[in-house]
Image 1 (tube, rainbow, N blue to C red):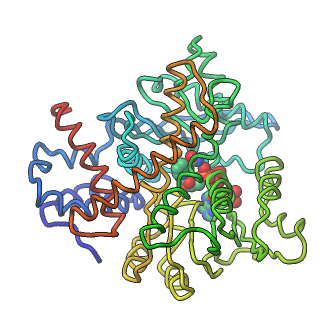
Image 2 (cartoon, rainbow, N blue to C red):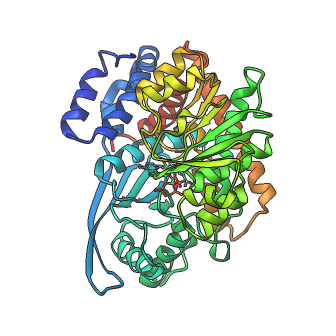
Image 3 (cartoon, helix red, strand yellow):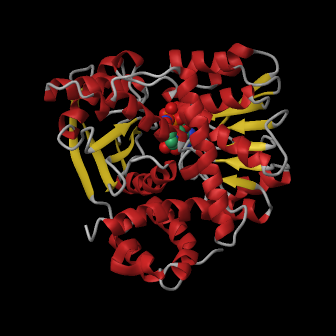
Length: 449
Ligand code: NAP
């Protein structure tokens, strides 16, 4: 296990003490601090002026009540969060998650990760994240709309195109962004398209934004595979989840010649040895909002559904965890390594536990961390902001070409940084250091704020 450098140990101890019980936040901070020992050794000035302590403390944390009325006329109460983590490089930027598991620790881990991810893109965006413990599953369209309106009624005071620009995440897609944008417009009497990204195409959205996170993760992994003379061509690939990131990861993997044999949702997973039929997954998940078990029922022979279970038991060459945090454990990593996996690319945020990351690295498996591999979503959100600012809209091809270029440069930056700091092939270290250095340089230039 990697240890935190002794100069950084007191910082970690303090983060754990000040944020008691926020386990995912602890995990995310520990991983970054484990990488920074080598930076401090080379450039001790980064430890001056409590710079690292400041990076670990969000600039602002907002927690608010979200009251709304359900279809039965009952008043429901949820809790809303927005953590504005770091604005050294630009306005806070990061998604909104609606899921019953959401709490302040989860939003803080996501906001912390987002700060370095956004720095890796090289674009002028700071880091933030938000959400609610609202569970959208089974809710009618009207309930979703009333919830989103109530959520934005409080959030609108804290966001804006030069302040904080939210987007989607788990449970928040273009439908929810539309309702939130509508309410923001109504409350402010301003058509400020740049306040949210992931919008529908008729009201300021960008072509290729919906596809961007999954496509971007696949571009990253394709380039990582190429460093060892491999490609997706003919590779058995398993993608967990069947939401936005998973669907467009599967689409790009298939277009690169890979064979996607399994995907999942929180109820279980489907295996299809003929290759996943993506039109069917889109119909079930994007149009009908049904469970993935429907896939096996409608696809018939050749595919089967396993309720519960573990998708990582399905043998594959490439694994793309694209559902949620800590979904791929040490046990799962052992199974994947035994089954001959050669690469793992995180489409989700922190889906691989620290033990599993270590096992992959020890086994020589190529490992792409989420803060680098899934940065294509936020990068394309920044492209959406550019289009909004210039009142322009670009073609799908042009936007995807820019996305591919950004993902290749993030890959090369991480690989080059890992090499510079004496750990060739360690993308975790490369991503953490490269992201940190950009944020640290900007914070240093802005003074103690
Ligand atoms: P999504 O469209 O809501 O899909 C989430 C998928 O993951 C669904 O299939 C869901 O299954 C599954 N899932 C969620 N929570 C789960 C849990 N606790 N256990 C098992 N499965 C679970 O969300 P998404 O936008 O694809 O986001 C997926 C991941 O990518 C998240 O980690 C998110 O932070 C990250 N990410 C997203 C973007 C983006 O642009 N959307 C960008 C960067 C990173 P159920 O339907 O059964 O819940």
